[in-house]
Length: 367
Ligand SMILES: Cc1ncc(COP(=O)(O)O)c(C=O)c1O
Image (cartoon, rainbow, N blue to C red):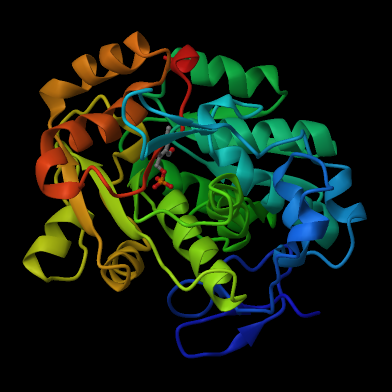
């Protein structure tokens, strides 16, 4: 099998149902050859599966049972008068967030590997996405969530037929409860944090932007970051485009954390390793990750692109959300935080002649 996991020491592993982490550290995917045959791509369906030469499947049977038509979300100008500044509308995905990209690949892999049941933990959107794709794939699904998760996200997870386990305590306590259940029950851990197949899905965000910008990559992308599924996915995706020779540019990644929970931004600016931080309440629940397992990897990726990490002022999130809605984009507070940070730092961050894409990746209907 050519799609293997690799650990920090370079040791390779064949993915299976039960092993979700190596002896030490965290799994990444071993890089494999990718290509982007333009003349074939344009004839294919308008979904993220059009990039099949850059996805970790040997045959399309594996994902055709699972797909809900995700991907190829619109890329539109934020304002008609601002010609180089685009927003990518990933909130228009089947379950209302970009997590569908990762969940579609991950659950297709779970099916391919022969999993019978799936466990995941989430602050909401990843759990919703995993629940929906498990429903599609007819897989038994259990989702662990912090008890503070919004009612609408809980209702959505339940509606897809997944069983919900509410955990009192922090997001980290929720992850621990899920891991314990995975170990005890030998279930497939559909973790968007630990399983690198998730990032093989979120990387399609970069491929689509390249195609939608007429085979150009932007100068900068502005993305939210908690556990890094979008930031690392985008990084891997732009790297894939570069290694395939269809661009020689890597966009600067500008990652956004929230004021109440910013371990990666703190470590980035103080040149330290990422460590667990004390948090205060933030409306941006999707990026409130106090102990991100891939924190140092995220910093490395952002540095390699010559990007930066900024923090959204908490008091601006409501206004930013209103402003976006006033332009026609109805997004959840976590997404509004990305825009709030951009508004605050705009003069230092972006020149008007630069080509920029900001992600709008969570639907306002959820909260
Ligand atoms: C809407 C939204 N934006 C951003 C994020 C952050 O993603 P990640 O934690 O993988 O960096 C999430 C995560 O749940 C989310 O739901």
